[in-house]
Amino acid sequence: MDEVLNEETLKSEMINEFTQNFSEEILNANKHQIEQQIEQVASLLIPHSEGKYFSYFAARDPNVSIENHISNLPDGIPQFENWLNTGLLSFAKNIFSFLNETMNSNIHFARLLDNHDYETFIIKSKTKDTNIEQWKSLLNPLFQMSDTPYLLQAAACINLSLDNAALSLLHKWIQSLWFEDKSIQKVFDGAKAIVAIRNNASKAGKKGAEKRHSLSDKVKEFAIKLYLEGNFKNPNQAIDDIYQKVIEFGESVSFTFTSNYQAQKTIYKWLLSYKNKQAK
Image 1: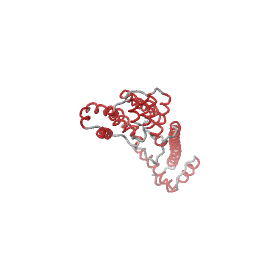
Image 2 (image 1 turned 180 degrees about the vertical axis):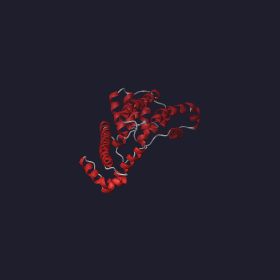
Image 3 (image 1 turned 120 degrees about the vertical axis):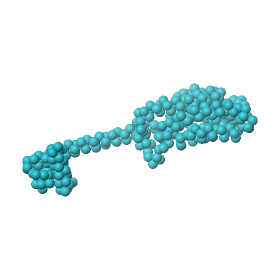
Image 4 (image 1 turned 30 degrees about the vertical axis):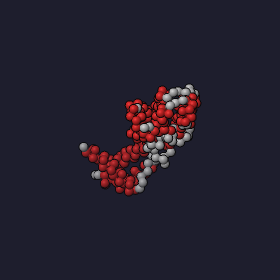
């Protein structure tokens, strides 16, 4: 959806629809029934619109690709895939069930969901004008949402027990809702590839750091060995005598100092740390 639904906003829109289509006398006479119907619609839509995934996708930066956005899901892609096949599809089926229970389930209602033609529906289904106006107040907020056509067309198919067609339309609805009409599977594949590249880079970086740390330890041990063999009074006295040998040893094991100055500074820290530990 373009933005996360707000419960009060949704209810307000439906109340406005009722107010525009009914007299005050009819509204007062049917107040309890209208309030109940509004609560039913809100109870279906709001829990999902305020859910973590609806919020996550509503907050997406338009400059970030959908694949990259999905790759950063806090709970990971597998859990989102599982939710997509259970929570979101369950939400859609609940809407269908609600609509079928509250309005007569027949081909005329299915056509209404498909074409939004209330006048033809009244004539063909012989529904009272007052009843259709009441449901128009509930259905219009759904009809006016930019991303609901596939969903309502799927509802029409469910109404006629055309389950396979309904599932295909639900698939299209999900694609238009969050996946920019791209293949859901391809988007997931792209997102998983990004995660794999990121993980491999992290592992490579970790291995590189571990390797360099290991080489550093070897060079440090060599420097301390020279320090001990030279019987120097302190690290500062040893630096001028041993630093060049330490640099050459480092190069022999693929460990490189950035400069002579950095080498002397590093070796001094190694020797001083060793000396202080020995003094404890």
